[in-house]
Structure formats: structure tokens, C-alpha cells
Image (cartoon, rainbow, N blue to C red):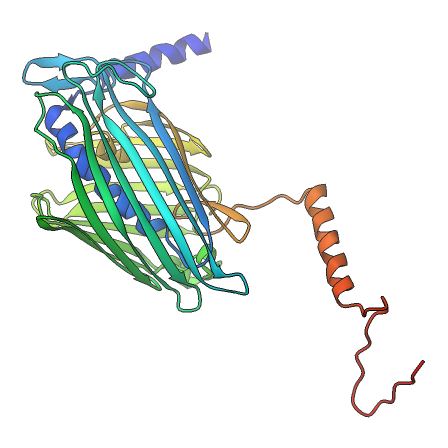
Length: 386
């Protein structure tokens, strides 16, 4: 009975979902390209580390993301399939200060009349594109700084004539950070396309900062400037409200649009492996829309969430289910993107055994060649020879 009520509730939400527009789907490519550059800035940090992300949406009903065109409303599926990886290692194992890393992010998104995993049917109103970001990274732990550079490839796989024309485009990008400050820019053959400045003042243990105290309550700012957009300046503010567990996020534009979204996010643990969100965003009509979501490790459920409205071409009043993993690793610790601390690791018999083996090895290294433990004597005390 409870399951039946849940199914009825979800179907009711699906029918109530607002359609997305072809213009918004066309703009989605540049939104994706900028999102990958923003993610790159949030991931990079000094020291050897790894980062892997994997994500895709799943919609039970085609009316959840129906398309609105000049010919009416069409049932179908908006989609976003994402993968990314970043790995870095020291140049010299004896001196791990300087590290070199490689990164690759790819997202395939658009709209299609049928649901699919790898091979769409390319229907009359389909748009299928991919955006890739690849580059190299050099960091220094002692200096607390790093530099990255690479390319972005915008590839329209299939674009129906009901959308604005799209062409293959190659972009370049550069990124540099020193302490809490980061500068970034992207360009193509026509000139610069975007610029970003970030000031992340919040102290985080995962970056070698404080675990608690006043420094953990300093704000984080991100300002992006776009060359070919009516809302050309975007500002994002993130603020720790309580123990790096409760955060407020505000995003707006320095234009007539003004405030775009605001939200509260609660993380049961500072590693951000799980989260509970409450968001509000303003749509193109100026109306406020409230929603929220729950994320637990790799699974996410949300309704009318501000992030989905931005990433899914203006989807509104939509219930989403998502596979969403974004996991980093450094010094044997794991954490989600943007986390303040690594995830707690439960001590098991295996880890205890490894600790004992490590202690035993240290004692053996401290022993002499004959197996006798070396003695440390103070000056002025005679040591008898055997």
C-alpha cells in the first residue's frame, strides 16, 4: 500500500513538471563547459591526489523533461552523462614537493525522444553533444600553489534543425592558484570567452588548514565574467554556518536578473559524503521556486532543485533520480568535492594488523646489523665494550 501511494505521488509530480525549451537546450553546451572549468578549480590542490566522478540522470516518465518547441510539446528525456578523472604523483619520490597530474572531464548531454544508455535514436527533436576538458597540472606543496592548462573540445554529435546550429569548437584554458586565490581564463580563435577569480578563505583540514576555529567560518567567493552572455557577471558566495556541517550558498548576476538562487545544505559529516539540501531559485519569469534533495554517497534524489534547474536546461518542478559520485583521495583519505575534512575511517582488525606490522618494521630498522637494539648514550658516560 505504501509503495502504491509512493508511485502515485511520483507520477503526480511527473505530470506537474514544466517542459524545457529548445533555446535552453541550445545554451546548455556553454553552461556545461563553464561548469567543468569551475569544477576543475574546486578539485585542484597541492600534493599528490586522485579524483574520480561519475554521474547520470534517470527519469521514470517522459513528461518529466518534455520539450517545448514552436510546434508544441513533445514527450522525451533530457540527459546528462558525466565522467571525470584526475591523478597526480610526485616528480621525485624522495622529495614529493612538486607533483604532476593529468585530468580529463567529459559530459554528454542534450535531449532525445527515447531514453538510452549509449546509443540514442536521434529523433526529430534530438540534440546530442559532448563537452570534454583535458589538461596537465603542476603543483608545489611547499609553495602552496599550482598551475594548469589544457583544451576543451565542444562536439555537437547530432543537432536537429529545430535548434540553433552548433559546430565543433576547440577552446584553450589556463588556471593558476596560490593559497586561497585562483585565477582562470578560457579562449578560442575568436578571443577570450570567460574569466574567473576565486577567493576561498575558509580553512579546511583536507587542504592542510585548521580543523576548527574562526578561520573555518571565513567565506568563499567565486566571480565569473562571460564575454558572450547578457548576464555577463556571475557571483557565488558559500558560507559555513555551523561546524563545517551547515552551509549557505547564494548565486546571483550583476545585472537586471539579480539574485538567481539561494540554498541551505546540511552535511552529516564534513567529508560531504552525504547531504540534505533546501534550495530556492528564480526562473526566467521572475517566479520563486522552492525544492530540495538528498544525496547519500552515489545516489541522489531531488525535486525542483536549483542545481538541476541550471544543469538540465531550466527543468522546473521535476523529480530526479541521479547516480552522482564525486570522490577525491589524498594521503590515504577520501572526501567528496569541496569537503572540509576527510571521511572517517573505521579501525578494523586489518588496519590494526597493518599498524602492528608498521611498528615492527620501524623497530627492525632501528636495530643494528647483529640484531641488537642500538643504545643512545649521553656525553661523559663511559660505555663498556663487550
